[in-house]
Length: 275
Image 1 (tube, helix red, strand yellow):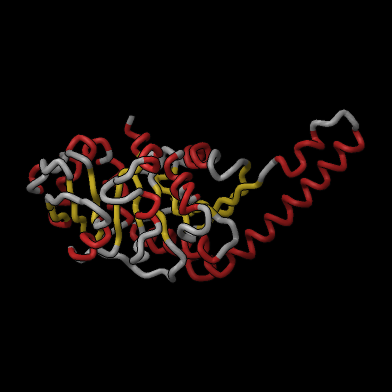
Image 2 (image 1 turned 120 degrees about the vertical axis):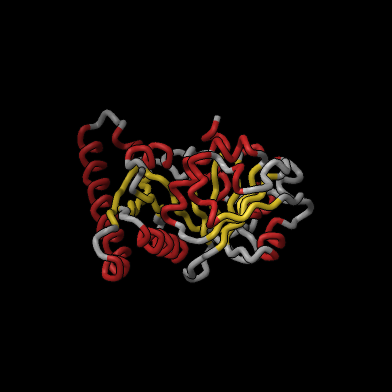
């Protein structure tokens, strides 16, 4: 079983909140938290490519100074959490953009989950989609998306799957998540196939006592409302980039689910990971 959680750090309060969620989840099993900050190589890359040796040396000095400052900033950012949670947090500086680098970094550290904060849908994101949604849709690893509210434990997660086949495809990931999340699962298959915990995939049957199965259609914008009605304080969905361009996905576009009005954490299983 994988033993690391990757957390995206951009030095904002919402990324600090994401780290807190990761640290709290890690209490349930031995886990290393990989706190990764992505550094854009293009900062000095254009000078590195030049033919002038003096310019290239100057660019290298600039880059090393940026790297050292970023390392110090990251260490300072993590210091409070390290005082509270010990040495489970490992600072990492990697390279690339937030939309491209996470697959490589998560694979390198064998991460079972990526935790990332979102500021919600602001400004033109209401037209072009949220930043967090685009990152999740382009990454082949499960995500836990949290908003900028202060950490609070969640105990019941309302998870929606298209059908039993999709649930089977993600059963291994769900089992890993169940090691971090010790609460209850409320599983809904939109196909209506899952009516009893005896129908759970074999590797999930050990979770039967923690699982409630329901069968209900989700239309309009009611996934959050239905979750609340069932006593859930977290959401779980399969997500795919194409859904950002459809009129309805489980009742509303999935980027708005990530920025849900109840500020619930959302566990995301990218559909592309099961292809």
